[in-house]
Amino acid sequence: MLPELKLQPLRCVLAILDQGGFHAAAKHLHRSQPAVSMAVRELEERLGQPLFEKGNGKAALTPYGQWCLPRFRELVAHHDRVSRDALAMACHQSGRVDIATVPSVASRLMPGILASFVINHPGIEINLQDGHSELVSQMVVTGEVELGITSLWQPEEGLEFTPLLHDEIGVVCRDDHPLATKDRLHWQELAGHTLIRNGTSRLLEGSPTAGLLDRSALYISNMISLTAMLEAGIGITTLPRLAFQEEHVRLRFVPLAEPRLERRIGLICRAGVSLSPAAAAMQRHVMAYLADRET
Image (cartoon, rainbow, N blue to C red; front, side, top):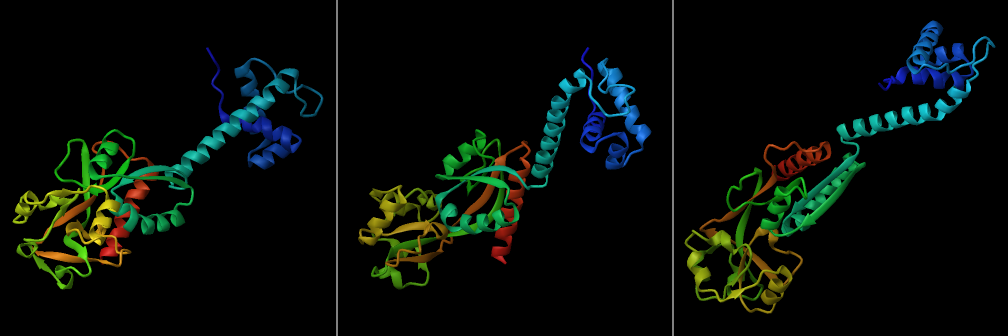
């Protein structure tokens, strides 16, 4: 049966050698000299071999002790390293968090979220990926990422959804389009205009605007291509406000007032599965950041 080696006697052996004797080791370890001597004696009994030469008044290692010394150092150092790493991770000072978001959140919200997060948690590594809402959900379900920020069209088994914010739907058109001068739009005002559907157009389903989708002959899923078509004046589209790219100066976002539609953006994680300390820190940070942003 293998002997169980406790760390404290190993620390005593190392201190005796590093400090130059039993008395100096006891002072360094804030223990009495008899306690240090007893710890070494019990260790020798457990191992079945003496570590120090007897009777010469000096802390001299036996050949067996010399063989043990580097291994004792390695064991103590490994223990201390693991303890530091585990404590740092538990205190959110180290670790890694994998998170996926829809592109609009990645470009509009994540820069501010991550800028403040890395200040408070400089030791945590962050892996951010973006994709459409279904992909984000899939990545969370399969465990590829721990957290996702997306809009859920309907509840999904195995996922826990925490609402973060509401993102209103509006009409996007070129600045010289007849609708561009409006403050708000009624859905009936969209009739007769060429509507370009996109990946978020499903938000209109089940509303009075659903008929507009049936009459649309254009569908573009890629945001770069969609923006190019809008800037070319080919038609109009509907987008959540966060998905509207404000840097395109020729485009206008006009809120849809009737009906008022919005998508719910939320944080998703696997139901019934604990988050790592780093991911839990990110979850709390995201929720606090967006709560402050709303106020």
